[in-house]
Length: 194
Image 1 (cartoon, helix red, strand yellow):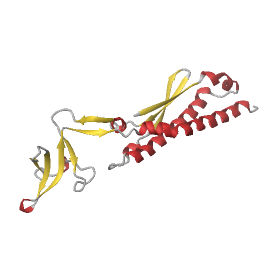
Image 2 (tube, one colour):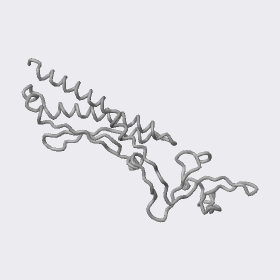
Image 3 (cartoon, one colour):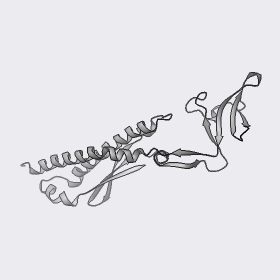
Image 4 (tube, helix red, strand yellow):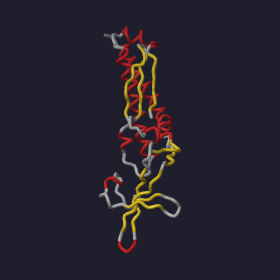
């Protein structure tokens, strides 16, 4: 999930050039700062909204990247390059794996974080079908007892958390203040005697 912020350089270019400053470089600093504010707010929103078994990887992956769109336009993109970032934000009612594979949903009471069925010895888990037709991977125990480790599914419904939209709304005032402050500083450089 990515959000773009763009600014038009043509309006301020002539005044800034008169002061001997590099227009693109100066405004790129301002826009990149705005992107960093947005990326920070995205990290906070991801942590606040994705509370079901979070690892922190999505929040840690939020970055701001500078974009040069045209000769007179600089922009910044804030977001994550993780493949599941968009699914976490937008949701996916039929999220599944293409092909004949099933998704293994772990029983978190028994299965440690990051473990998959492939991490178990070959004959440690047994496939069974429950009375309702559910596909299960169990670990047999003594006296006919067993421990449920994974439920196998064709697809799952992943609801969206909409962290990107919330971050954009939450960061708007801070971004506006940042841009206003930085432009004021830049204009101070322009007005300052050489």
